Amino acid sequence: MIRLGGPVFGGTNTAANHWDDDPDTWCRAVVDEGYRAAYAPVVEGDADIAEFARVASQADIVIAEVGIWRNLIATDELERRANVAEATRLLAVADRIGARCGVTFAGTRGEGAAGPGEGNFSRDVHALIVDTARQIIDDVRPTRTKLALECMPTTFPDSVDSYEELIRDIDRSGFGVHFDPVNLIVSPRMYAEHRELIRDFVDRLGSRIVSCHAKDIELSAETVSHLSEVAPGEGGLDYAVLLRELSRLADDTPLMLEHLAGPDLYRKAAGFVRGEAARAGVALER
Image (cartoon, rainbow, N blue to C red; front, side, top):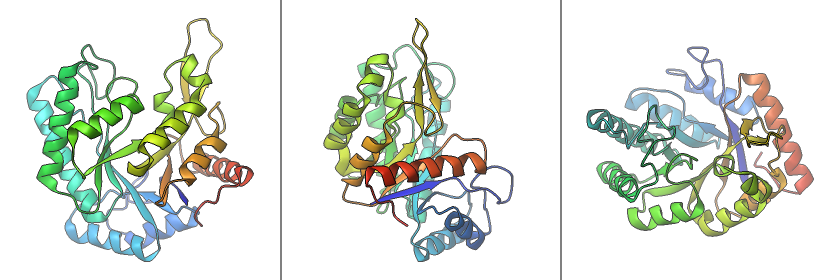
């Protein structure tokens, strides 16, 4: 059964998920939104992490993700090593709090954290991602979480084929699959055929999916194609297909809303997803 989740607001600052020392209030905020899954709250210290894990378990809330979001393949070696060290620390946090995954993008050989870069799709970069993922997993040796890479249009994994190759080459039980269907739609043809893309991804990688992002995508009518991320319900993604495919998975799968500006828009998006689930005959965990 699918567990809908998203960020919660009202903690120690105006950003989402900042609840440094108030696990009970955080838990109530998750429940009040009708979520059955949550992003890991921003916490520091083993005692706080243990308390957040306890209240989540008590309320039957799945902590879906600890966000890592570091450029693990940066060209500057000092920067890359620092990012790998932080990714290792955050995967350990994910394991202590009982999250389904610590998730990151692989990064880029270009500028910024995850944008385009020359060489991003080279065999050398594939090998670097493999070695880096192995290093992080072997240093942490997680027992309750997985390291997962979000699919990105700018580097590996950018398709079900490249994800399968990474799984094979990394060869670690601590490596899981993160599913973001919007990030896989990178052309008008893939937009038109995205239902088949979703089915193929779940067919081939479903047993390893640990979390999924919920957003939407819109294709412009311009001659030079432009694809834009939009809120669920404002684009062309077939949520009935996505929800039916996710409902086939054995474990309670977190479907996590993201990238929206504030609680009202998250509630609107959650209402859309719940409505699509009802129309598709798919049960969401309540």
